[in-house]
Amino acid sequence: MSLNTEASARPAEVSEASETDGFGRGDASAPAPIVSRSRAPRALLILAVLAAVAFAGWTYRGPLLAGLGLAPPAVPEAKADRSDDAPANPDLVTLDGAEQTRIGLAFGTAETRRIVLPVRAPGTVAFDERRVTHLKPRTQGRVLSLAVQPGDRVTAGQTLATLDAAGLLDARNGLQAAEAALGEARASEAVAALQVKRGLEQLKFGGVAQAEVERRQVDLAKAQAAVKSAQANAEMYRAQYQRLAPAEGAAPGTSAVVTPIAGVVTSVGITLGEVVDTGRDAFTVADPTRVVVLANLYGADISRVKAGDAVSVESPVPGHPPFEGHVRSVNAALDPATNTAPARIELDNPQDLLRANLFVSVTVGADLGRDGVTIPAAAVQQTDAGPIAFVRTAPDRFERRALTLGIQRTDWVEVRRGVAAGESVATAGSFGLKAILLRSLLGSTD
Image 1 (cartoon, helix red, strand yellow):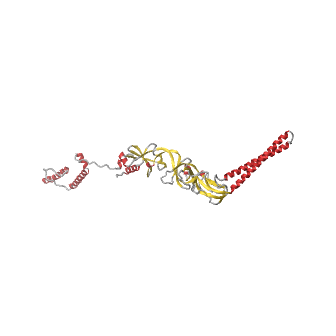
Image 2 (spheres, one colour; image 1 turned 180 degrees about the vertical axis):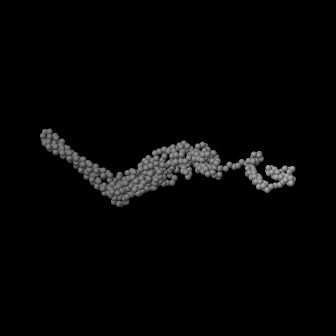
Image 3 (cartoon, helix red, strand yellow; image 1 turned 45 degrees about the vertical axis):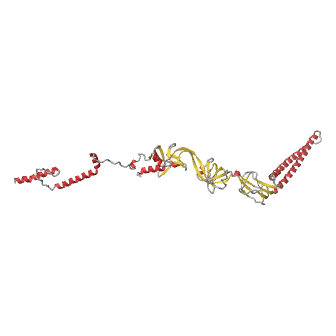
């Protein structure tokens, strides 16, 4: 009884010792323990812990090996164009000289200038009305000869046509009658003057009465008035005859149509053998060396364009430089058919390239009366947020600036906000700067 009790107690002690061992081993001198059923779950837990440790060691083998001094040498990794590599300022682009040359970067300077808006308008060429003459026959008559045709060039004093002037004979006869009347009036004046002189001498010794002397003085006054009237009548007929008299060397009884200016015959209104009078134009002669261009201004351009503004008129001949001039005036009245106001432009036309009724393109430099900061037009880039420009802040640094634009031309634009006078801006190649900035902002790795 006692032996059995000790034997049954011993395995229980061994079991407790094994439980504290942790590896399932007992004392070597002790007999093999008897494994209890409660050990199986603990063994499985130990295996799970060992598996987790092994997985962590494999995953973090690099730091572990490095800590033990057993890690292999590190291979350098290529630098990627990541978004976290972008500069702190998202509006800044850094580009060395080689990259600037590669994208063809060029520069311009913001400068202050007079703001002049180019106003483009259609125009029509016309003769200067002060250089056009409409010639009418000086007297009624039959056309004997025509010396010119439309398009012919003439000189001042040249005869254009000859008429068999019936009015010339009337003027000559009238002049002769007026001269005869003038002679008679002068003779009567001389007699009246003599009678007055005699009467005054006789009045001294009572040969005539005072009333008679006074009557003779009245007759003298009438004779003098008749002389003046006859003189005026004679001068009138003389001027008429001289105006109608044929030119030197011309046939008697003929009248010539003579141009007072040099120019080009633009129209002929008479025909050979036709009987004409003084009521219609026989010829029209215009001087084309200086012409007028009427530019049709519309809307706000009417108030922008002023007298004195510079003008450029496109030449109708390819390759010929434009005609330069200035605005003479802007008509205060609108054309009711087109609702436009014509601006008068006077131009020299030495080669006759500008012909009447020719349609031309006119560009007026409208001075807006203010100064402003301008940059080259090539420096402006358009984005979804509006126009921008890249200002060179250092030899390799370019800052994006949002712009507020004013007047925009093909060669420069007015900048009301964004760029100061004297700053350097990128012109050619600025599109490349915009692309680099957008790629950096989007984190592109291209």
